Length: 189
Image 1 (cartoon, rainbow, N blue to C red):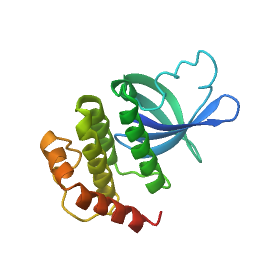
Image 2: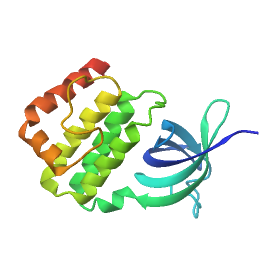
Image 3: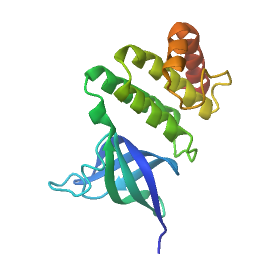
């Protein structure tokens, strides 16, 4: 009998797998980045479809098989994408998620990435649009620090997207973007 893992997670990416299945990239609070298969998700009336939509935050039940993870259950907690009504925050969220998936080639067991993504999505949903650019730069910097690709000081605690921290990032944007670019270059991408 396989052990079931219950955790909170956000769907970063969905890709068709076969006729009705989907391969998901999930960033979880306990397990870090996990790629899992969801069976029958593309069938009409699939029970888990809403809970496993892109950027949906859900309570997940995951099972580790011999070679891959499988989603055994999911309950929608909140659709993080709904709070981002305009196109610009959605593009920022997708760009950050794509960068995270590029930098983490396999599975990453570091749970510190989840609060960064959660805080960034929350900032895109609640803060004024003029702070979104600074939030994206800060999120990328926090992620690079967690992955060991940046050793500089952060303007606030990891995952803290406060207006004060974002104002500092906006003032010193060129220096922070240069740090992010150095971190990406250090990754070899």
